[in-house]
Length: 160
Image 1 (cartoon, rainbow, N blue to C red):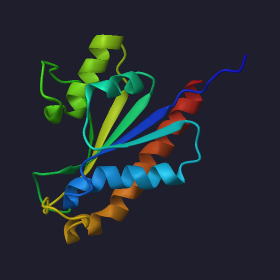
Image 2 (cartoon, rainbow, N blue to C red):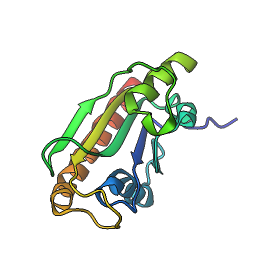
Image 3 (cartoon, rainbow, N blue to C red):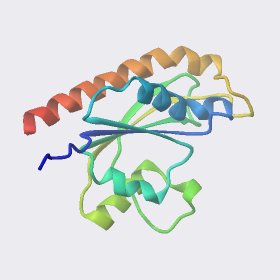
């Protein structure tokens, strides 16, 4: 019987691609999905974080969330490690990476390492194009994303 490989890294890019900068996470994840050739990498572009994602998150060793930040200096790149946060009941549009991790821990007893990559946006109105600030930060975000993936795949390979 052949063993099925579970993803070592799960990338979840979320946001609305029809709302300017808000589509950053979805767009970057969709691009990476089309380019992906690694069996250790699963990519999910989605419009928002939902509780159903915990069944996929529990299988990963590392999760990288990609989103456009609403607060901060437009164009600023952020990369933070995500820790599980309070998981009290909430509406799905209020679900954060930290709450999603907490829910995964609570329901399945596992909590993968997680990061949030973001660029602070400035234009969230109707439209399919990014602001100048987000456009200028895209190359750096892609570089950081690939560094995280390479680092985590290397670490996961060393643990096996």
